[in-house]
Length: 149
Length: 352
Image (cartoon, rainbow over all chains, first blue to last red; front, top):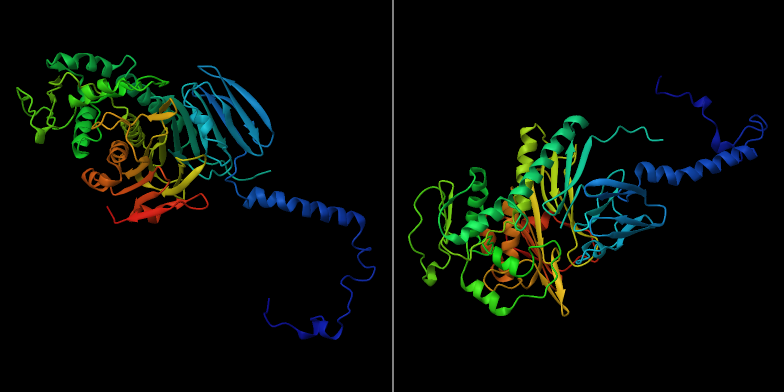
């Protein structure tokens, strides 16, 4: 483990700038087609792994919909759909699109839930209290632990 | 795929006091966390049954007896909030006034779905002229004065007298409505209960009235403040230790009639919805003070808010006017992080 190195085993790069990067024939013709496929697959995984482990976890993954304080449904935000949720006054309609959710119709008069607009960040929520329906965005690491309003 | 440990965060939601209540508890095993959340849920339900202003409750029974003018007994456990409301009302120079239940009802806000039309101007003026108020109340110390002082300088002298769990109103216009502090009070009760159960890190959030204790593991709690003038989050702030944040906004409850919007925060001086500000956010150690102060500052407006805040012991507040300009003190300005681009116009005032 001596830190002094023997100069004789250092590759004489300066003297042979055209040295091939791989031993000629020694590694069996690297890279093969299979190597390239594996390499491409690994590269394709990089964005996913980046988002999963280092990405912006603030963007929610699911919406948790409560009716009367009880969980009515958990729906993924990646799948566009419309939900009709029956509440105390009638049906509230929610729309999911592009990783976000919003109320688009509700039988409450003030329509605060509709005015709340799109919710996409983990921790964001909107509620139609007269209809006793709420939607909360949940994700891995919430951007906010609570919303003040 | 993930090998990370499950987050030690327990969350529970419930509907009570006309609010969506969110309880977050950090760092406790799921079973005791759930027991604590259940206990807090019962607190909220009990407060709902006790203080509801228009559904059958202890408060509606009190209100039914107030116009009679004779002293009547009140449960001992109701007295602390009545006493605290008196004190906060006095500090706010009557701008936070939970004795104007009749006015709130006249405007149609004693219902789940206020719909208008606005009340007759003469009816509003008649109620305002009676000056129902909570100021100068004495709690179990001395006898209620025999007659009401009607001189102008003492306009906010007591019209209500609390003594040895007896309550008496000498103004038939007094009807109590704790809507402006009910949620803050419930949040304080809940946090106190969580502490008694050994919980050191938690958030209780009742429709945006928030109190935090401790931290979220290694970091502070992160609170988003909703944009009062549009969708999304306006700003964020980190909180830890023991601190409350409450916002009163004109967008919370309102009705529209003939193209005009009428909101629920009634100025007790005029009898009409307060004008000028869209929302007021107050930080304070306890949620009930923050709740009362946010209402009082919204009524006070840009001219008087600093004096009222100072009276109420408020050191950090943010006000947003109808044009979207943000006003806040220098201490809060250092903590607040705007989440919208471009950031709004901000006017920073001296430390409160």
